[in-house]
Structure formats: structure tokens, C-alpha cells
Image 1 (cartoon, rainbow, N blue to C red):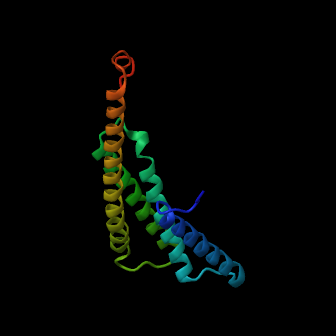
Image 2 (image 1 turned 135 degrees about the horizontal axis):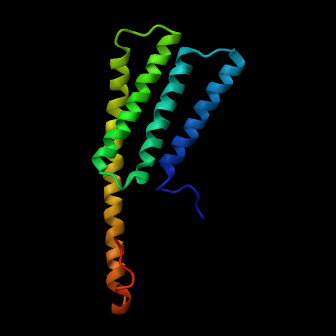
Image 3 (image 1 turned 60 degrees about the horizontal axis):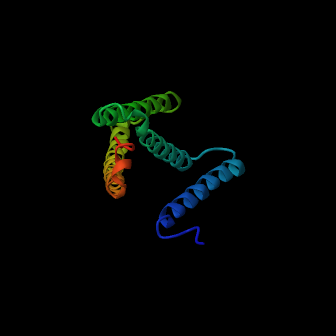
Length: 151
């Protein structure tokens, strides 16, 4: 049995790489006793990667609401968090005059691309499952079709 295969190879590499980078950052902090700029930037990038993935993964909880509304609210919550993070960062160190614009663009563009890919993939996955359900329903004997209606 293969644990790593064609389907999970890239995601396995990404997880291992992320763990190695985070381990390196923690080890450098322990040995040097302080965070450097690049270390802080890498941690911010990690957090700004985890949050959108988490928020997108929660879409199923809001299936009773229109998809467009869910997408807009997800984005507004995330961009609000990014802007709040930027503001809080400004309390501890000076921000560049374009910091909010840069954070907005640095977050919004990759998020939009990722969200489009995610929702298109989700749409195709739902269509695939619906085709499978339809095929299973057609294969059932006549008497059982009425008892097992799929919404």
C-alpha cells in the first residue's frame, strides 16, 4: 500500500515544507532570542495562508444562504481581519504610508484566485456526486426509488 501517491504528492511536499520552515523559525528564535524581519514576514504569510483556507473550508456550514452572499461575507471578514492586523501592527512599529493598500492587494489578489479555484472545484465535485447519485437511483428497482428520494 502506498501512503504517498500521485493525488497527494504535492500536498504532502507542501505540508512537510511548511513544517520545516516553521521549525526553522522557532529554532532560530530559540538560538538568537529575537525575531528578525524575515522571520516575522514568514509567520505573517503562514497566518495569512491558514485563515483563508480555514474560512473557505467552513462554507458548508452556510449552505442555507445564497452562495454569493457567503463568498462576500467570507471575504469581508478576512479582509477586515487583515486590516485589523495591519492596524495593530502599526501600534508596535511604524507603517509605510501605503501599508493598508499593500496589505489589501497582497491579500486580495491571491485570495480571489484561491477562492475562484476552490469554488469551481467545489462546483465540479457537486456535479460529479449528483451524477453518481442519479446513476445509482436509475439502477435501483422501481419500488425502492420512491422510498429513497435525494434532494
